[in-house]
Image (cartoon, rainbow, N blue to C red; front, top):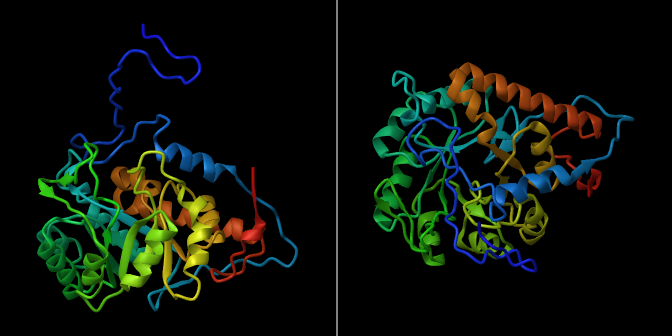
Length: 332
């Protein structure tokens, strides 16, 4: 048994970090899980989301209209389907293709879909009959690969492109390696080059500070995703906690602000929208349904999330997605 310093909680003996069992199918790490310990940003994020309470403003409230405009296009909801990846490799039933099922669900429900890291060949297959799509690439050490992937997305009809700018460090303190492909540092000059690589709006995904938000703006990005990428950074600040500061810093820029991270319900989405998001990304919030029941399960979950969002908007007198008001929120 190890001894512990009563003042600091520090162990006086070295203990190996316990491996967290994954609830997800597929090879180890294909769908990431986090530690559940004090350094897990998802714990802090969930706690912060749950600490935000909502006052009721029911007099004169009417059924809300969820129609949302993003990059000049109208969608049925401000809920978008997050940039998941590699899901076609996780199920024992190889006849199923969850990535294509997600694409089909987004198209049917008239919501914007994001696709994360996939080979060009797989991406091309996924978007054959897709609705509006945003492709997100990694900060590869090979900059020409980045340009090539962005330009292919433009050629195949994407409505925007972007990058996981937060996926630079690996757990070993070096640049990360994903699927055998080395990632690398991202400079302001690099970002500006990627923004100019296509004529599409560029999204800097993985913003968690005013500093990076304003740098993305100055590099020419059309949008950001305020996110810690499912807790990549240890002890990461909750996205909704930093969101109001970012919103204030970007005032007048006309940038679109998306929010991602632990948004598991329409109620969570409401809080993000009330604090200044233009739209949100739902990833883990649809993942079980997608893997279990495919397109139909995903469509049903989107409908449920929309119902929850609409319910909260009606309770608080918000008639449409341009009228959110942070003054309805209270913080414990």
